[in-house]
Amino acid sequence: MRDEALARLEALGFSPADAAVLADHFVDAEEHGRIGHGLVRIDFLARRPDLDPSARPLRVIAEPGYERWNGNGAVGYLVLNTIVEAQLADPPATARLIVAGHTFPTGVLGYWARKLADEGLVAAVTATSNRRLAHPDGGEKLAGTNPLAIAIPSSDGRPVVADVSMGNFTYGDVLAGRAEENDLAPFGGDQAHKAFALAVGLQLLVDALTPDDGFGAVLLVANPLADPVPAFRELAVGVRVPGDR
Amino acid sequence: MRDEALARLEALGFSPADAAVLADHFVDAEEHGRIGHGLVRIDFLARRPDLDPSARPLRVIAEPGYERWNGNGAVGYLVLNTIVEAQLADPPATARLIVAGHTFPTGVLGYWARKLADEGLVAAVTATSNRRLAHPDGGEKLAGTNPLAIAIPSSDGRPVVADVSMGNFTYGDVLAGRAEENDLAPFGGDQAHKAFALAVGLQLLVDALTPDDGFGAVLLVANPLADPVPAFRELAVGVRVPGDR
Image (cartoon, rainbow over all chains, first blue to last red):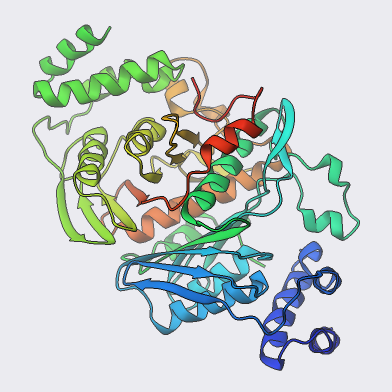
């Protein structure tokens, strides 16, 4: 599966290294049931008229507690991967906010957050996409499904990764033919106003922090001061912990 | 209502200034339907054996992009108010993460986030409390209702404030006699695993960033680079925008 993905991505013009980053993400999504973020997305990339496989994201500002990036035409997956690698190469002493404009599509946000937690960093990641969620009472589509992923490292080597989209399914499910776009709504049934509010809050958070038009991502990366996961896992014995596979 | 609250709080030993901070929060909660976070909480404070009305929070670390606070025995409302005032007195040039240990109870998080947005800052606030949410499939209670409040300033003077608890109701509703504690669960019905995952992620985020045992709060405060709210309000005409009153 990975070899075929690599071949198709290199045929689109991606370098072997970038193709490997993309293939690893898509294969991981396939293997963990997030088929809508899996190999189907290679077709999605192939159909983009503005695809520029050689584009590289730019780090516009780098301070100890803040970085601003511009996707600069690179596909969002590669923007997030570059940001993650930059954080691992130079982790914050305490905490750092990273804002990234022109960053789309970003795939499974928990995948990128986990890479940070695997190396001992706390991470929270959100990102915008096309407005597909209306208020539960109706009206215009106002917010993307805007997932929030939170990853917490653990001394036992098993981070906890919560990764929640505010939609009742993902647009990836639509791409994968498993759902109808018209049925996409904030999750939560009669409490869907809560998921709607979170989607709006995250939408405006990203929009306010990224000055460029278009989609963006915001990452919080921090050095933990405590190691709460092992005790949490003891308390949670018998139930599925978010992100466990 | 405010005068009576002030008198009761001063009778508990709070200074007039601190009593005013508390009364304003409780009255605001009453006026906006969050009765469980309203005047009933004065009784709750009065019943706390460890209540220390003269305690002041300590700022342990202050860097441009990071602050660490310790509640130091002060009630959580006053800790958050002190943190908010410190941010307004010295706003971040770009962004700042603030972590606060020993910070409980914290009340309506959107109330504090709004104070930052009213002065032009983007804010995200979360806080932990007693573990009251189990996994939707059952088992031990693993996470607090752990609200996430996100406030975005606006050039039109009307910030958007999303403030979402991960519970199907608040513990404040229990205190107010409007709900039974045993019915408290992650919101979302057959998608409650999503609210559960968010509650767990926020719980461990706060626990990992605050080294002290007990409850804590985490705030992200940032200087916006864009002003997305007016255009959002145009798109959202006819529906209730989160936080609007």
